[in-house]
Image (cartoon, helix red, strand yellow):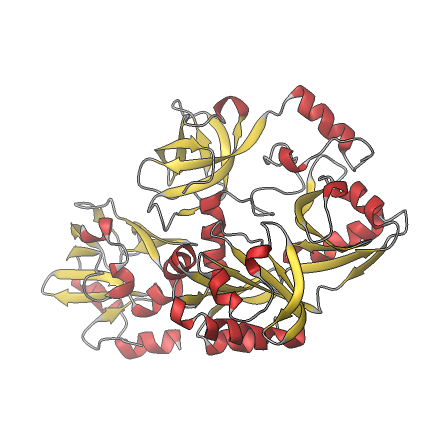
Length: 360
Length: 125
């Protein structure tokens, strides 16, 4: 089992640890609901150092990225980040990721921890043009600070003007006395905030500085449990649940990051253009329970006659709504906002409704 | 870990308070801590006769769903309705406000199968 460099800090904070993607990670400290609400109302600090980072450099970097990712990297200026995915050559998705345009001919890819080896092998296999690629996952730590108070807390620790960083942009600067921290206006919670990338040896110092700076503003350490409920309230996909090697980016609702632009011959482009023209048969969509119950991964979605029309891929009790919410693949004719559907929970057909996320 | 001596326990992490022929049942402080925030308790077996170790309900934490098992055979004569709107009572007061059902005990011979606080402590240590 791998550990992030913050492992001992988590134990000292009383975290409950679980095994996730080969790492021993904090699932919660004080409780998922309280951590969730701290992020919605104040701020939460997350260790997401298990995430992977690849560098892509050199004169062939752009060509490589235009081939392996679905989004248009040409449009990405230095200092900007972009959500994207790796199509898998069979109509599915290898992983979803963020592409950071670090500087001229230098990019950083941030990938899911569970897929680091798979993604790395895939990138090496597809790098026929000879871009310089490097797997830096074991050297880089990632701390996310999310919530409406994030900027005011973090501003105490840096002279970089955080309000100058637009959404999905980043600045590399001094943070808490550490040089070259990537301060990125991104996140996976929908409550605003920043993600900070640093070398492992600086992570404990930065984590402690943020917790201290945010003490008066209600910052709480938050674990993977709250990270999941927060992303679900926004309807953000989780690779492995809501998309995988067998779901197309179009079915997963990722048409907006699948760009059929000129001079971008990416993997699966022809397949996906065809699929777009012909129309998809099922689509990832949001579900809100109208009866008491919680949709969970693999539960059946049925119509009023009990016929199977889809399957739940993620679900939880929304801490904000106090209602069951979920994501799932539903036959296209039912994947319409407001459409009544039913979720089969313990052999009962419970009323739900299709809802285009976000849920809150 | 709070494990009242006056209660009996099961390997399924339930506690049982015996008062005459009535057994009150809940889950232990250890169990609620392992499950995390309880968001839903579903018990639809009121008035049913159930055998020891049959499922009498379901408890859902944020991340998990677990069955609740009868610690003794008998009739479910009462369900804690407060849990319908305040499932968090199971976290906050596992031995008080977080009780789940009352059972009319069918066979007092089964009481011998329940664990003492010390036996249960040995199980979870």
